[in-house]
Amino acid sequence: MTFSLATWNINSVRLRIGLVEEFLNTHQPDVLCLQEIKCENAAFPAKAFRKMGYEHHAVHGQKGYHGVATISKAPLREIASTDYVSKGDTRHVECLVDAGAGPVRVHNFYVPAGGDVPDPVKNEKFDHKLKFLDEMKGLHCDHADVPSILVGDLNIAPLETDVWSHKQLLKVVSHTPIETDGLNEVQASGGWTDCIRQHVPPEEKLFTWWSYRSPNWNESDKGRRLDHVWSSPSLAAKLSGIQVLRDARGWEKPSDHVPVIATFDF
DNA sequence: ATGACGGATCTAATCCGA
Image (cartoon, rainbow, N blue to C red):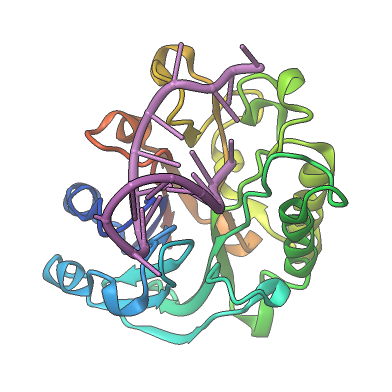
């Protein structure tokens, strides 16, 4: 029995529904977690997903910005969203799905980017990001005795090998010590295992995002690993594979993030 | 300096991303 789950910051689900269809038809994950859908719930292309066999949706969107959606072949239960930092942003949705060997809770996150200046006093967006991380520390991987998976665009590259140049990015938002320490605390306090780094050695450079402003993204390869798959240790023990679809960055009209697929064997 | 782009929105210029 296998269970696969993908996470992808799609940067407008309506604009890129064609790419999503191509991805789902090729890889057929059981669950897909999207971030930055950039539309209200009513504008979510639910019909297109149903047509592909993904009939169950947990959508939490807003007009123009942010927005997350978890779609699934199997039914979803206990759908809920938490308004971290109480700003009314749509940055989290959770649900329960039967993974074949019992229920699994899936948390889908879009953590604030944090703006340009890595100083919470001078930059309100950075302050917001740090507060968001603080509130995530309350999330435990075995809440209510159900094992969990936490995925999404966490907008932080924690390891030195998660960025193209550790030295040059130490003062750049997404890789500053206050952010990487904060993310590590979220992970440790919740008991989460980093599934991607369990599968790909931490010594190896690995990215999931390349800026639109880099024309030769593939050759210059100035990427960052901003997208993450975490799980309860009990689930991580069943992890059989991680795929980072780097090629997706080269598709026509791509997102600046690529999909990551985690496969579990039960 | 990486930023040389790209998305959504009250279709034109502005905000936002990271």
